[in-house]
Image 1 (cartoon, helix red, strand yellow):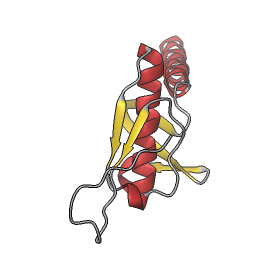
Image 2 (cartoon, one colour):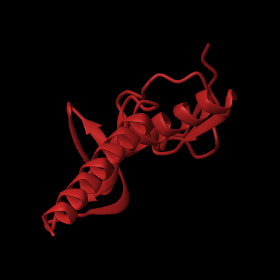
Image 3 (cartoon, helix red, strand yellow):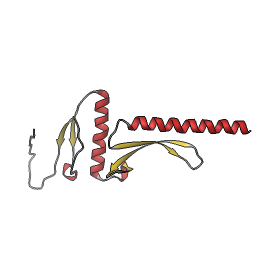
Image 4 (cartoon, helix red, strand yellow):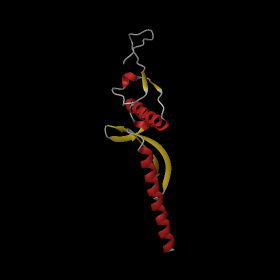
Length: 128
């Protein structure tokens, strides 16, 4: 029984190490978002999950609890990672842009959509 318990412990340690390496490899593609792929349970087991954690001034919070600017920048970070991975660029429409002070850097074309009370018709402004 002791030998089997020892083997079970080794298997659990292997699984934890494999999970940590996998999570680190996935997260290496992102700058502002970290994905929590597995959750340690009370009984020592590991449950699969996939929760985006957004960087808010140095600490990570779940995506659902992040403010609007954090969610927008998290989305841009995911798009940047996919663009880099597949070697493509895409036009990005950022709605409610007035609620985001600073967008993270991206190589994609950004089209900002602002709400403006004084404009009654669609207005287009171009920046270089």
